[in-house]
Image 1 (tube, helix red, strand yellow):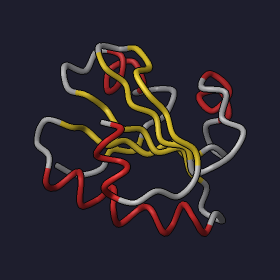
Image 2 (image 1 turned 90 degrees about the vertical axis):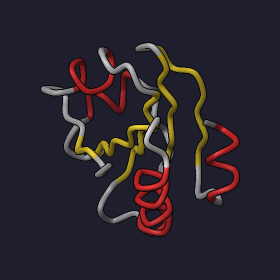
Image 3 (image 1 turned 90 degrees about the horizontal axis):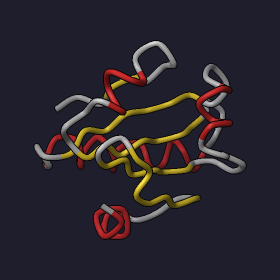
Image 4 (image 1 turned 135 degrees about the vertical axis):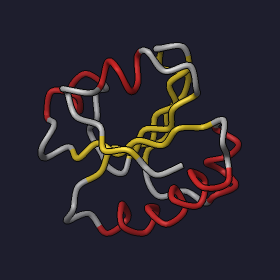
Amino acid sequence: MAVIKITKENFEAEVINSEKTILLDFYADWCMPCKMVSPTLEEISNEKSDIKVGKINVDLEPELAAAFSVSSIPMLAVMKNGKLANKMVGFSSKEKILEML
């Protein structure tokens, strides 16, 4: 499954109302660690059919970043049944991200 671009317009439909677990990646285009974790998230998206991966650009979606209290990026958040289940800040290995899920 492809990584989904999440905006405030599609947040409720794609995240809150999703039946699948969602891994949200809060990132910025200028952030090097964000660019480093991106290929890993693509892999997870392609390998795990029970997980949806969404990317939220904190520069374009400040309201969503504020709602999740994002103070440092990359920040990964796991959403289950419309609620925050887990989060991790900074670059992480694929193994750590899968453990968090």
